Image 1: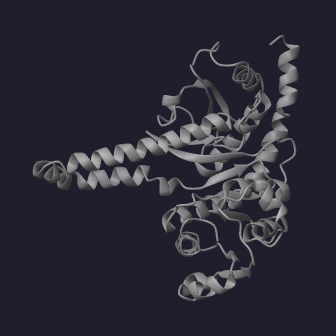
Image 2: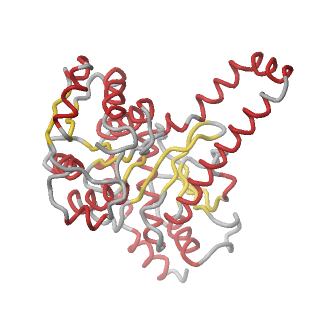
Image 3: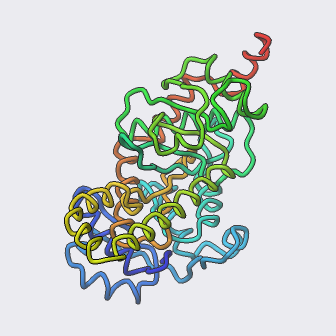
Length: 340
C-alpha cells in the first residue's frame, strides 16, 4: 500500500518480477477490497500471490514513533512480522522510509555485533556498478560503525555485483592519509590493520562515486544522503539541458534522430529505475526500500534485489564475515595497543 502509485504500481512490479524470477512467490499485505480486483486482472501474478488483509496502513508523513505505537495492523508491520516469523524471505516496500527502518529494526533486530543498520544501494559507474552506504539511516557515525558498514557492504557487493573480493573505499575530503576527521582516519586504520574478506583501497573523494574507483564506497548517512540527492538532481538537470539542446533547431532535432539509438542505450544504463532498491543491511532479515515514486520497472528491480539477497543468503554471509573479522571494537583495541 506504500508509494505514490500504490497499489497498482506494486502489483504491476510484482507481475514483472514474477516473469524475471519464476521461483518467487508473493504475500501481498494491504486492503483486500482494493487488492483483489486488481489481482484478478493479473492472472499470472494471481497464480503465485496470496493476499493478506491489513486494515490499516502507514501514511507517508507519519513519524516512525507514531507508526510503532499505532498498532500491529498496518500492512507494513504485518509484512515485517511475516519475515520475522519465517513466512517470507524478505519485505519490499515503497512506503514511509523512517517507519520501515524503525519497524524493521524493532521486529527483525540487528545482527550479532552490528550496532546500526545502514541503507545500501547500487550506483551506476563508468565501468559497471558500485555499492554505496550509508544513504541516510545514520546521521552520525563513529569509526566502529563505518567499519561495520564496510564489512556489510562487501558482503552485499559479492551478492549483487558478483565480486569475489570487493574493493572498499572510505569517502573523504581527500585521498591523503592525513585528510579528514578523526573518525574516518581511525576507521581507515582499523580496515588496514585487520584481515578482512575485502580489499581496502583507502580514501576516495566525491568525484569517485561514479568512476567505479572501488566496488564499495562507505560514508556516514548524512554525507551519503546528500550525495544521493545531489546525484538525482544532477541527473535531472543534465536530462533537461540535453532535451532542450536537441529542441533548439531543426538541425539539432535531426542530430537527435541520428543519435537516438546511442542516447537510448545511455539512458537505459543510467536509468535510476533499474537501480531501485535501498537495502537495510545489518538486520536479521531482508528489508528493501523502493523509491516511493517508482513505476513497475523500478519496483520490479527492488523485488529482484530482495530475491537475490535471499538466494545468496546475504544475512548469513554478513554474520560469517563479521565472525572472521572479530568485530570493530576488537580491531580498535588492537590499533590502540599498537600505538595507533
